Length: 116
Length: 113
Image: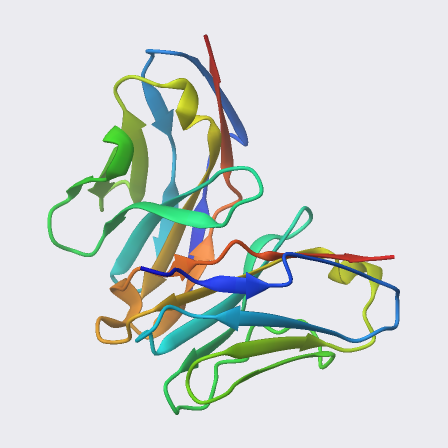
């Protein structure tokens, strides 16, 4: 079946511009996660959505970062006024919610963001 | 809170040799532990996971890991390395009430002929 898809696969932007990254989770997965992978910080959690519950935003590094999930499916991560330190690979993952924290998270291929 | 330590940012083995990638965890509650593999320019793929059933867990591609509570370890092993195993490997931890994965810094496995 189809896995997690992300778009665009690569994004180059200028410092100060806003960017939107999209994630399509696996059909039927009610949990959705965003992570960031960078040379300096490794793999770090950003935000978690579970059904209609309020998202866990505890990993967002600043108020320039926001995310939404529409209709319990597609999610968009928005970075406003991008900075060079935002350059990283942004990974999306989804999982079934029924098993909670022991459920496998399935990852997309990521969006590679470069801020010039 | 949870944390993971992976000893060795790079591990080099010869084809056919034993692979051992180390992972130690810290968790204030019973953990769930995962090993993921990442090939160049790809996302993460699950190799195996520990969810409090059997302490010896077998995964894909001949990998296995053993959960040792007394040592707070979850090391990944494979008896005989193959060239196709060259990739980056990440150990991660989660726990009930802590849905997010906390990752180690990763270990790059290099396999030489």
